[in-house]
Image (cartoon, rainbow, N blue to C red; front, side, top):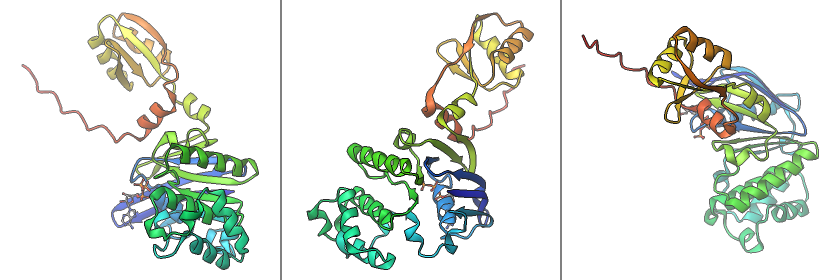
Length: 304
Ligand SMILES: Nc1ncnc2c1ncn2[C@@H]1O[C@H](COP(=O)(O)OP(=O)(O)OP(=O)(O)O)[C@@H](O)[C@H]1O
């Protein structure tokens, strides 16, 4: 279980994370999604006690992370796969971590096999590893203490498609056995297939959270097409509706059919089509939620 309550982090004038709250339940994988610079790493660092929050708090297994004795036995963390000592071999890295955690060396060997690092790789220095190999070693390290919670920052970075598939299976299996997984990504497709819930962050704020179904149903959209697209566009704008062009003479409007129909009727616009816009999919939703704010339009010059 992970509980994040109103976490906020400011660096001088920059608010990296603003009032972020969410929960991750045992038996589930939560995808923490947002574009570059959205505040994912800062949030994960605050959860793991590495960055002090300006306000708010986070609990892992019911307590602040820093209060957990020998945390690696309870919470597996991988925040930066490149942080491993470049001069040690993969085997030395894991053997040392095993000693620090108080688990036997056999477990380290088992985890190296589990993450699919071949013998010729574990004997090499980490400095010569590809990013994908470092990620696998980082995941082996996170799993070493047989934790109940996994917190992983961009674990799919540098993995090839086979590696991404492997990681999904590993995380799904971990959650299905009762574990709690929180993983961040800036790419929806990396987590879409494995996450039970999504927490979407943009500009430091949570912009949506829920299951796939919850997220999609919360975004009612209507497709509308009129005899005179220009007049319809003005009618929608005057009604304060958020409309985007869709096809040559249609619009996708972020509102229900009734609101759209009423706006058109008020302006006397003749409609040729009015229907639910349908499932644009999670990808489209994610992109629209995390798109940078539109530039304000230039005021039109008065032609007269
Ligand atoms: N130590 C710091 N000092 C000043 N600003 C910071 C610091 N750490 C992060 N920031 C700023 O906070 C914001 C959020 O950064 P963060 O690294 O948490 O985003 P992210 O979602 O993890 O991005 P990415 O996907 O690129 O890793 C960014 O604007 C970043 O520049």
